[in-house]
Image (cartoon, rainbow, N blue to C red):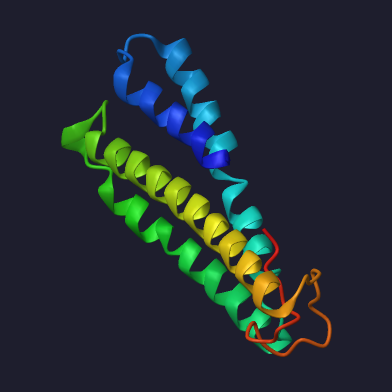
Length: 144
């Protein structure tokens, strides 16, 4: 949901005149408020759905490492010739926010569907992660 807040901020930055600095400053707050919670929320959601502790540790490290690679992209797409609007940057950020929003919704819907399928096949389950070695275990249910 925080991607929506960022998306609103980026759209404001893209559409408002650069002379209206107070609105642009507010938009930067929205971008920041929406961007920073995405990594810890995504990380918590990801690792809570991996029952194997070794896989959970590995996935958690990879998630953070890949997320930090965004700095490589962002530091190279700000070009002086696009100042002060920075169209490439805004387009990239808007695109990434939309992708993140749709991916999060799709992943959540898929997990709900998978939990319903498992409930029909194996009977009602609960959110059990202890003693479950794999997501293939009939007792395992995704935490949405």
